[in-house]
Amino acid sequence: MIDVVFLLLIFFIFATKFPKQEGKLEASLPSSRGAGKTKSTIVVIQITADGKLMVNDQSYTPDELAGLLANLAALDPKQPVVISGDPEARHQWIVDALNACARANITRISFTGL
Image 1: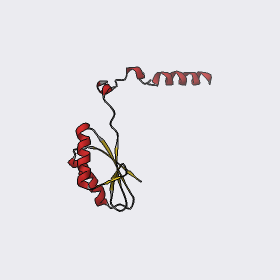
Image 2: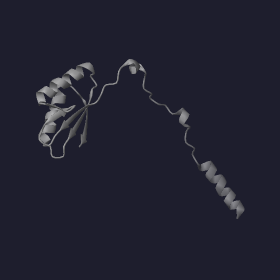
Image 3: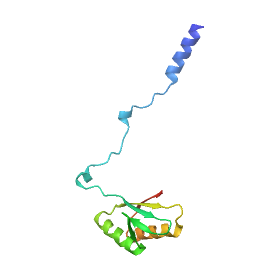
Image 4: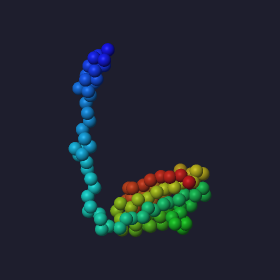
């Protein structure tokens, strides 16, 4: 009986494929080109239940918001923006904020709820 167990053990040892070591995996690491650049702050556009577009507790019209975002995009072309909508906000107001981002050529947009 022990010889059968021993043969099974040897069979499974030889039949097992061992994975490659992690040190041999190729990885694409980021470069240090941007080490001297300052990190851009995330702009949060809050859309209230009554349709106000707020940035830093200041209300903006869609055209004013597009101007503000265009100024920020001129400083940092990869300016991140977060659109935070109230659950009672109409979808049109969120689309207005998206259109303001599009007019300012901002492409890094995230969404969150209040």
